[in-house]
Image 1 (cartoon, one colour):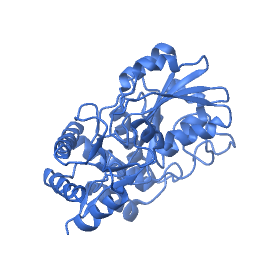
Image 2: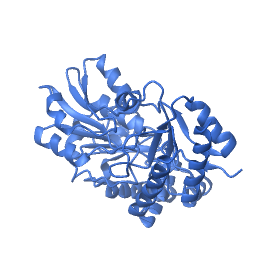
Image 3: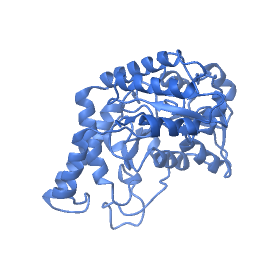
Length: 383
């Protein structure tokens, strides 16, 4: 049976061939660390790491490539940013669609005196911009927000929220896990102070590599969550004040960075607009087909405007885990079912505690696969 992968919101698959080739070459022909070895091989690897920072800085409209910090994933990035910036007595705004990568650090910080308010979202996930002023408090310091929901695919208006933050003197932190590499993000134009990303989703890199970009005037306001050796200022036992060393202790995931470098070069050559157009064409076809299947409820926006290629559904009267098992076992279709690590989003969308059956499309999917998915859903829903 030919398998169909519809779980790209979890991680994109497959990756460009150049990603695996780049990692293999590093592990078999280079393999050395950077910032430590004083030899040509280490300098060559360091140049590749530097180029990866440059590619990310250019992609996201950052102000300096040294302000690109590598981490394991977007979750680690958000923990560093939130726990390093927020102090007892601070208040932040979040959307009602946030992933636990934002909410769990904030709930931890709540026990230390940090508070947060959820900006209301409609049942289709649309952010209530007009409600933001009423959510403010005298001690509000920042807005922390996902760009695209991993549950329903709804996009938040980064430019409007960024302008809101600029006018009110607030910092703006963005979780770009679901949109980086597919939807344009520009830190300068959208007034973003810190942008957290992961490499293994829309950026088409390997798992285990992510990072964040931070504006120059925010650096000193974020206390490092981790500390240790950096290969620089080794005569001191204090944390370096400069970037990227301030936030990059220990040995970097160099195979992951090299893989990400190759995926970014592939992305640059292929074109983000082409990828986005393809994914939304698939999404349109899927949403249109769902309208013809009785008994299925689609969660989120009905069309492709203001959304990503993530579609969640419910089948009233059917256990969604059973539906996901049948899709996989009988039709070879891989999806995700449950709360998707975002209980707050499900409460806002009216799908808590049942959760949803989620389909998420990527560059390698085809219209033929979409039709096969629709046919399978039709057969399952008709029982």
